[in-house]
Length: 169
Image 1 (tube, rainbow, N blue to C red):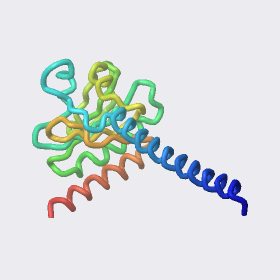
Image 2 (image 1 turned 180 degrees about the vertical axis):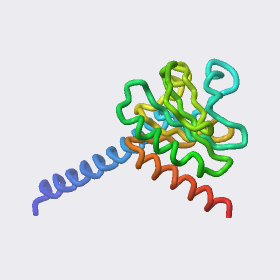
Image 3 (image 1 turned 180 degrees about the horizontal axis):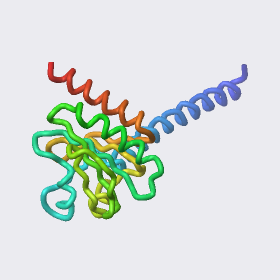
């Protein structure tokens, strides 16, 4: 093998390694951007411009906020699933429905809080609807996920309840 051929092969391998490293870094940066954009770690403050959104958190409990909008064709299925699960939740876990429609009039059990405020709806910035936001007792969003069906909501909530039970051993 000639020295020039060996140099070209070595350079090609180095370029491939650099490309792979760059792709890995890009993926990590993208994950961090999505986590920030999806609202994970956002604190709904009790003061300042975000004071309105503080109503999402409940002191001493974890709130699962279902964010729906007025043009959502699958939200009825998600709300039916939430209605079915609401009675079986632990006492320190509750549902809140967050709608951008001040005229929201879906029939829901009394145990599900309903917030009909477009300003709070916009403050809970996730790029999809319907969405599930898990808000801890301090008003910090700890998890977000798109909820494309009632089955998806049931799966996420069942997993969250199981994880909470595992922690309290």
